[in-house]
Length: 158
Image (cartoon, rainbow, N blue to C red; front, side, top):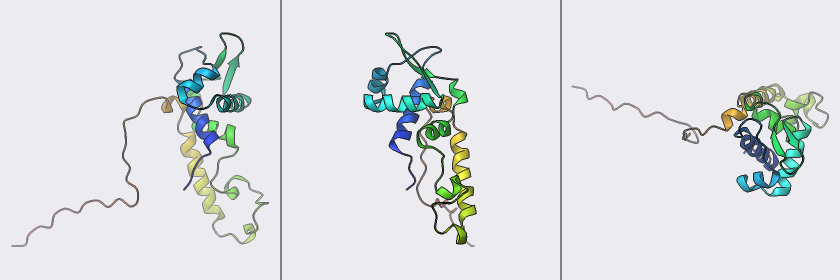
């Protein structure tokens, strides 16, 4: 199963929550922790990492807190995940062209295909903004496995 890390997941949750704020509104770490159910120390850690990458900004003081550093439509899910996890990729060879850690790189027949997959995943994550994440979509049911359309009923022969 392909999964993003818990920290990256929390980052998307927190950034999406900040995307719902109006204008210059700020949200404190404790308020974000309460609203999202993410432990306060984790909220602080994630926001610090997002701030280091320029995705959120903070204001100190009694009325301080956090907000997105730019419009929610200008920040995508890939930005958030990359800020917390580094380059996005399913395999190392799709992210790092040097392949220093791979003993098989000189004889690998699928490296190029993994790079295609990594590019597709990155493109999908780059195509979803925090503004889109902040909207409530209609539930969509996607069946697992192969979807086989029903065959029309057989016609009777006369």
